[in-house]
Length: 398
Image 1 (tube, rainbow, N blue to C red):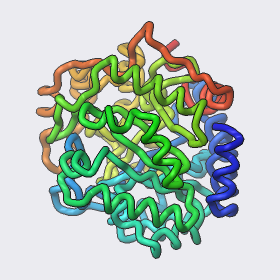
Image 2 (image 1 turned 90 degrees about the horizontal axis):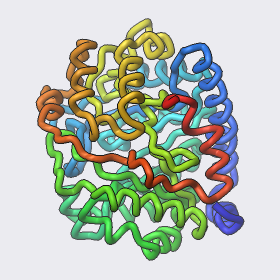
Image 3 (image 1 turned 90 degrees about the vertical axis):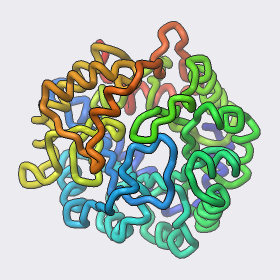
Image 4 (image 1 turned 30 degrees about the vertical axis):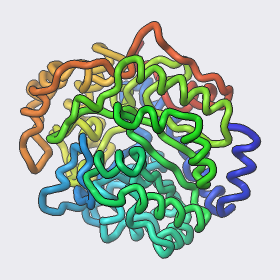
């Protein structure tokens, strides 16, 4: 983050959208985290950021995807989404991550955004359905940022995502967003097959040239029915990716998001510290998107998501056991422990394929972002300050 980054944002985005982002996400998000920290002192955990998979439907078939994209279509209906968001807002929440499947295949996505102008939404999408008309509608509504996934070159994208002309269609979506002056992000699941292409300064320069405002590099996790362990990064590549992101934050006029390290460079799990949990396309309340087990639904307690989450024995057990075992990803490092948590809480499989337990039992332990002795602290004062006070840590590992 730099003066050049701020200048680029001011020149290339709609000023009304910048104000919505700064106020709904920045200011209100900060207040939401402060409320979260006050609740923690009373032993009460309700995440300030909720991630909601609004549909299981998708036009692609990505390797490593855990969503039942090949099964019959399921969506969270508008009334349930509206009630969920309204309920969370009563406790200070103003930021929601919208996932799928492909969120733009939900028939009432725009209606949801429009119903909550006092919130901010980040939409995780492949970009294939973002036309100029859709982008113009997003600009009109003004409270959402598309985070568009790119998995590598044309060949790698088609191979990873099992489609034709995948990158070309994604690029068209990015261009529509930039033309319509949206705050536009690109997310990449960094894996063995795209590491050399994406963890490169020239790729960041290309994103800047395209008009992208922020990027999110997250490491590939071999989970789900089509897990491919060969794509997993080596421990050395995970460290190299972290080092690269920290350096680019200091040197390039583009923002970088990450959710798996604190200001000191120590690993963390957002679900283990309670800052975020996940809602499945079936309304199941899960610890995180890749843990497809639950005991509660968003319709429980007459739709009061605060009561449902704060009273969930499964979520509480997950947070405690995970934090005691590792600062990293318990799914990758300790699938045996995750199985124990699921069994002792009697959690049910939330998938349509009904093979989540078999997939968990087949997983082999592997390293994650938790690599003691190899911490890479934040270098830029702004990221360091924001992470320390508003995003990560909060005493979960003490």
